[in-house]
Image (cartoon, rainbow, N blue to C red; front, side, top):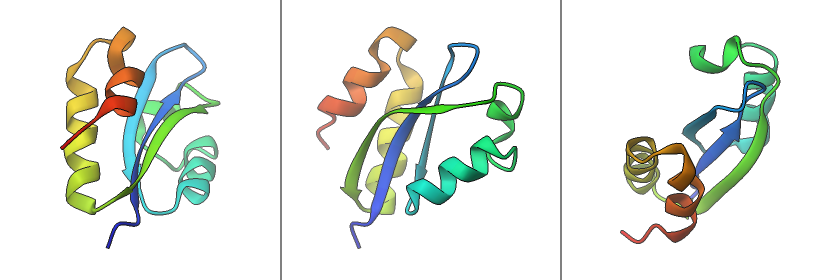
Length: 84
């Protein structure tokens, strides 16, 4: 099912965090309450920068991996322009 998405957050320190989920609002609440990824716990609050939806779990995970491999300056572009 294509109900997964890859998302990019901007943390309070200006760094980016990329992840995948099938429930974005719930995941954002988890991150901002300190129950999300360990990386963002010390960098709260976080804000949604961009996301790409309508993906299978596999597609979302592959895109997350691709985003994490590029420099910060290109992360949003990779997320926006991804073609599998």
